[in-house]
Amino acid sequence: MGRRRMRGRMVDGIVLLDKPAGITSNDALQRVKRIYNAAKAGHTGALDPLATGMLPLCFGEGTKFSQYLLEADKRYRVVAKLGVRTTTSDADGEVVSERPVNTSLGEINKAIEHFRGESMQVPSMFSALKYKGEPLYKYARQGIEVPREARPINVYEAELIRFDGDEVEMDLHVSKGTYIRTIVDDMGELLGCGAHVKVLRRTQVAGYPYERMVTLEQLENLLQQALDQGRKPSELLDPLLLPMDTAVMTLPEVNMNEVVASYIMQGQPVQVPKAPDEGHVRLTVGSQRVFVGIGEIDADGLVAPKRLINVRQG
Image 1: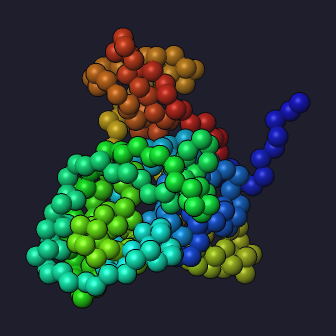
Image 2 (image 1 turned 90 degrees about the horizontal axis):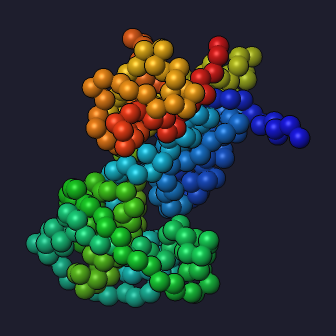
């Protein structure tokens, strides 16, 4: 049997979507995939339906590097509502308890200080983490509590933006796998009044600039504009794609000439002068520094291929 033909066009790169509230990350991905008529796409770590903001979407060969964005640091702007605790630790959940808010600015600052730095966090039951093959939120919706292991997280920065009666607005820069809802819920218990996430916006993933985000509405308008003008949608949409190597710009670069690159593209480890001693590296070829994938330094100090892209012709 021949290979099943993929529907849609082969398009490579990354779109920084400004996800709207009220839809899942997968819904957002499917809509953008349809707009681009892309054969292959994936997102880089889900945002809750309530949350908005930066959701990098990888297309084509770019999907090979989504894991690096999944593991990248993130930055969030969050508004916590004090006095009300919910089942999901956000405004979409059912109210569990309501308590009076009698807290001072000093106590708020002390609570925020408590979360700075490294700690262990038990993930929320309403997370997408899996237990026996099913996401935790599916168990939670059935009222089933399952064991979760605490995981190491790091809150690099936690700044108070606004404290207004029963609302606290914060800017948080965190490591991968950090649940902001859990921080807010824990903070509410620390203050003795309970709390939940009212508004959550992801403002940064890795080093991607906030200004490069695009909305679903902008993408849909560009698609319609192209159709109205009798142009190919790709003419207006593809300039918004970021190069796929932007997902791995934090990795050290190993630049090779075309002869050496030809060996690595055939799956053979190669020796490259001045290559790092260990870890993953970003592979480029020639003076134009054409990105060809990710390598890994093996036990012999050679650069071995790890994730290579299919370089498309034309």
